[in-house]
Length: 244
Ligand SMILES: C[S@@+](CC[C@H](N)C(=O)[O-])C[C@H]1O[C@@H](n2cnc3c(N)ncnc32)[C@H](O)[C@@H]1O
Image 1 (cartoon, protein in one colour):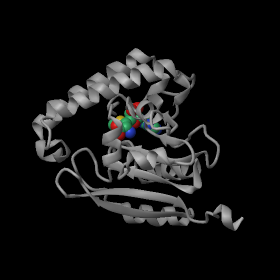
Image 2 (cartoon, protein in one colour):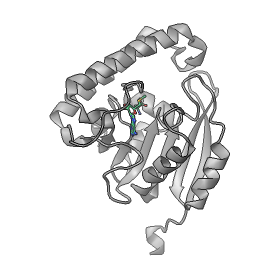
Image 3 (cartoon, protein in one colour):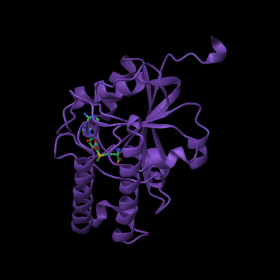
């Protein structure tokens, strides 16, 4: 799992461990859509998610990329446990920021993270090739490798680490490694305190200048019907196979 030369992630970035169902809710995806993907899915950052392990059972191949994978597995697991504790504290201190946990008691929600973390630990030990140590804005994958790329809780969640230039470079890199027929989905579009990204429009304009089409897709959260937003990116000059 470890790859030399990749610096570990900054310690103040949480290594979270979400399960597949939470990914589906956050990115407006269904299990059926994952099962039908025509190619592999990239999860960057992968954190200690259960996604790769769970999606394989659907027939969906997932590669997770994260600088934390340069660390030994027990250290990643410790970081994920620390993230769970931080999340428990945050939910207790500011419950209004975590409406997605409302239908469940926080403890039940966090138990889903425990399960995902155990799946990650087992899967990354058994299949280390699925977990690639890499840090945005540079990924070690060829152009167009992935049918779908997901990027959650990083680029807009930590504005102190990712300024506009860094975000632009990272988003362009995610598009580069994604098939011209596929798409990149990024969420959330706010920081850890719920503050929306204030430069989303100029950032989308800059993406357009790089020939990347963007859309802010809005969909209702199943829990309470409130709107969730995902940034969807595609290579603007993609040529479909039928045209080639
Ligand atoms: C809050 S977790 C998000 C994990 C997962 N996507 C999720 O939604 O739960 C943030 C992750 O970003 C990783 N990270 C930090 N810097 C990164 C970078 N430059 N490129 C890719 N991942 C990075 C951290 O190691 C950490 O695992």
